[in-house]
Length: 219
Image (cartoon, rainbow, N blue to C red; front, side, top):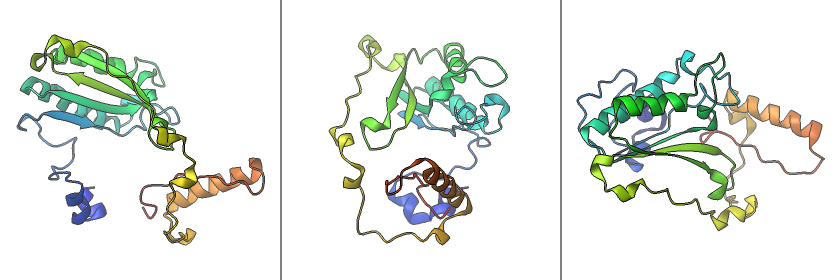
């Protein structure tokens, strides 16, 4: 669904997300003008380690494939660089066999868009920046035709953010109202129930647990 329909025009304008172009899997990107960079984070369920990992057999994988198509197209048009984010499962073999999606991605770049010569696989953990543990793979590619040879050097190291050592309580806002469980969406309520059951079984009484909900707990 378009972000306008989900969150309203004010939210879209606030984050300067640009115009809504339609279904990314159906839109004709061939007539798009060249951009400076492509930054994308397609849906992860097709390759997630906590999912079924059917990869290309999962229809949601079409979004990843289309993002790769756009990266190839924009590389030919002269884009400077791209950043493609995905969960670590993208480097695993999918269920049922076959090569990892990351391997297919690299081979497509080599054969269809050789201008993306400088590609790095950068593993990062959000714990280095915020109090949340999420490991991700970032594929960072530079268009060699647009840069000098020194861009082929190693990417800068990840420097841990000292703020990540703070207690979670220091980040919590104390002026927000309590959320009534009746306001939660069905799927968030189910997640909460699962965590509650786990807490009652394994967590000592009185221990505070943190449950990650959706950014918008009503959807």
